[in-house]
Image 1 (cartoon, rainbow, N blue to C red):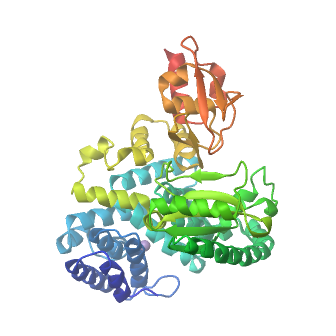
Image 2: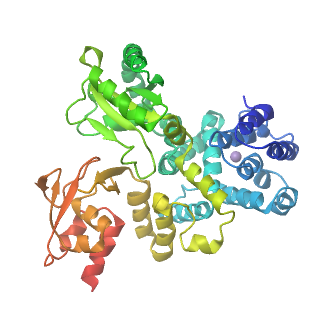
Image 3: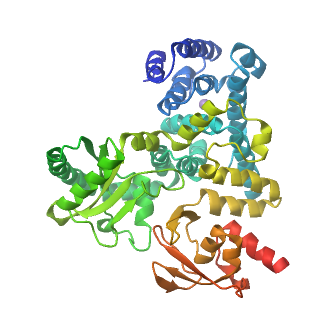
Length: 491
Ligand code: MN
């Protein structure tokens, strides 16, 4: 269990002494405010505040965030006002707590579909004003999910569903892959109880077998790396349960668990990027890469959420297929603790304040292209008055699963699942979209309604005389393409 001392110890690893005094003061303040209040679990509320602050400290967030994490429930659940918080702490702390309180009041699952859209829109707007609000809200949701079994039945399902539909995808988009997996696994048994039971019984022996196998593989690769004088931390990592389930549902897997090769992955963490490639060479000398699955180099081509690593699928000991992930310590920390947080904090250091003008212009993140989707949402919600179109934009573009495809020059494009060469063309440029005549994927001609897959290299064949076709609207999935095609016909 979390205590104020363990929280302070955590913060101390990256923060100054003066900050610790502040944090202790916020803890005392929150403890007094929540005096006598208990959670459904019977625990005092202050334990929840500590758990939230501690997750924020794991992400190495600034003191203002930690303070707001400790104080995030006082305005909602006690008679402390925002003005009081501002006076006792700071304007910024009060703003963050206000943001978290506002988001908390929005129940996404209303009776009607329109309500859901409206609420989602409200929530994203509040959160987009300061990324730290999202992070505090995620930490809050994470602890609430861990204690969900104590809640009344009817609340459990609503909260678990909201977690699966909104918070898990959000954490993925923010580059906190670990949090995404944890949230999904916590929500899974509540939202799909029967499938959860089915999978549990099916998968248990396979996980067991994979673990024994990976331990053997760790031993073998450890020796080889040591012989080449590469310092590395090597361990096995089990695939998250929910992610296994969604994989089993894919048509090419068709619920056959034998076809899943990443039940357990082997992770190699080394010091430098150079060591990553050296380790890759040593791995391939020991175990041959599987043709067609091969190597995915997210160091040379990071995913749009910033994720970096090298993935390779190999024939391991006894010819069994498994996945290996190679990365540096820094890449590892970023992936575990939030790439977005990392950028955001770096930006805050450069620029101490964000004006609402910056937000309106959509310029509220440092390397703005990296979190372009949040910016896009804010811009869209201004442009799009019709809530159905907004929901479509949101579901298909921002929160749906994504694929990553490449241009012939090697630029990465982040598109929703089901995207076609036409979606790709419009993502590259309006003119490219409008002049699309045909497309090649991995060197072969495909139809324009072809469903792209992650890793595909897409080449658009253009002609100055080509024009958009009306039936493209029947298969494109991105809002961008849809709007551009519609615009062409309105002209
Ligand atoms: Mn809370």
